[in-house]
Length: 298
Image (tube, rainbow, N blue to C red; front, top):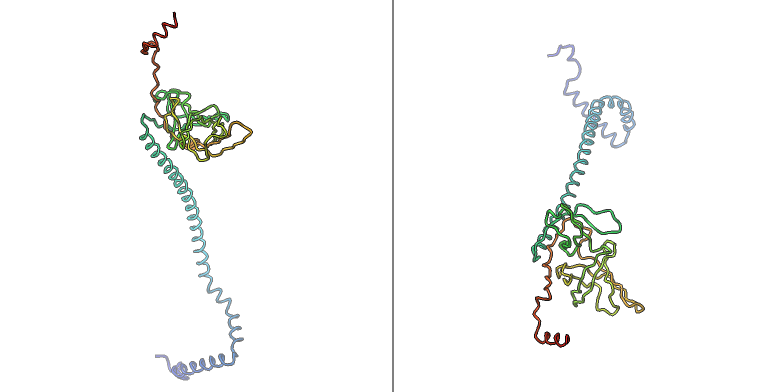
């Protein structure tokens, strides 16, 4: 127990009741008459430095946490950016592989539809000659490639083998200005010859009369009458016809059916069976013809 000297004055309960009543009275006066607002403001101004000093440790801790957290976020952001670039590159390669895979499946289906054998080849490079439309393939004489073989993709004719090397071959595209393909109009069987213009994606039908039955959108396929191109291969689609009564021939512009400048893998078709010429002396001469020949000699 505390000494008697320190136990003088009102009891603890009395003091508690007094301060509780005083607090209630002050609260009622402040609520009713707003007398203590200025006093509270004065006390708040006086103790503000103490509050700031008391908050220094928590402020320092918060700033330090924010610094380390922001530094970690910056590193994480840089890492995510690098990962995003890597993922974007992989996604683009995946799209390219999917497109290439689809084109290879189409080529495989095309090869299965062909009667003869077909060899798949890949474009190595394109010569930098602005006046010629040619590409180099990775198959040559060592792979059984011969001059004159037809090169196609899954959509139609691309060109023809014009020069071979041991491990490479040169293909002249159908858009080359010196290249021509005998064709027929699928709609009505009209025969003609489509020629290259030297421009990518442009062909033309030459010497077509103005009154010829040909329309925009007509499909041109190989006629097969030259003994080089198999019949029925899509070559081009008529895209524009210019008719002028003052000229004898119409100007017919076509678009290649195949992806002449797009695909990387192509098919090299086997040569058609050559036509064997029969010697004249082997032919059987009819008796009437012999008699006429004898009469003519007399």
